[in-house]
Image (cartoon, rainbow, N blue to C red; front, side, top):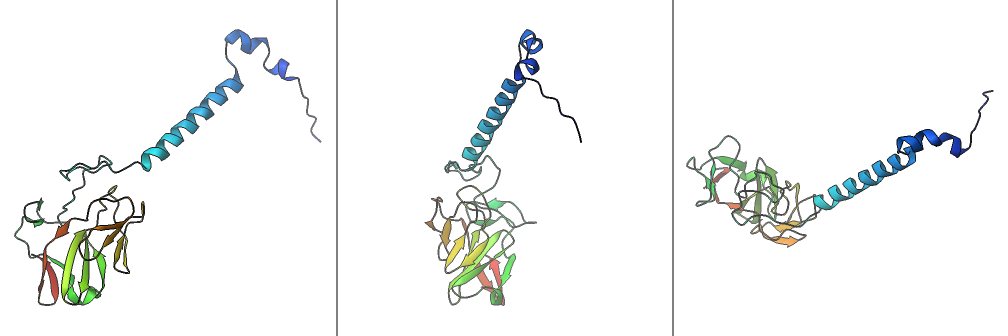
Length: 181
């Protein structure tokens, strides 16, 4: 059995610490309070309000995402046309892959079919804080980060903190494919 000896607190924090002008207990408290304040500040910053710019070139989180992204491997998005500047025609999805009254997320886009034969494509980047949307269900496009929902018909926000619609890219049917117009 181990023999444990105890001393009164006054002996532990006696004259040596007082002479040095510090206290271990005080230092720990300061560190813990500082860490708690830092954690609270980070939490509040993560759940801030939408402060995105009107130009749509810089996200509210300071990121460099565009509200009109071009597909990977293509030229830069052209805000005037809503598509890419490479002349369009890039295949986004097969017609058969997009369910009527729903949609799919493929590449940088959410491709929807609100009514039979009508196809739409929207940016998959939420206009609230720049998170990618992750689901299309029940006529809604869902963002998992803060609970925003968008219409599959026009990309407009239907619930949550997002205030702006998902940017649309014009598309057309070319044979069995949906292509950028």
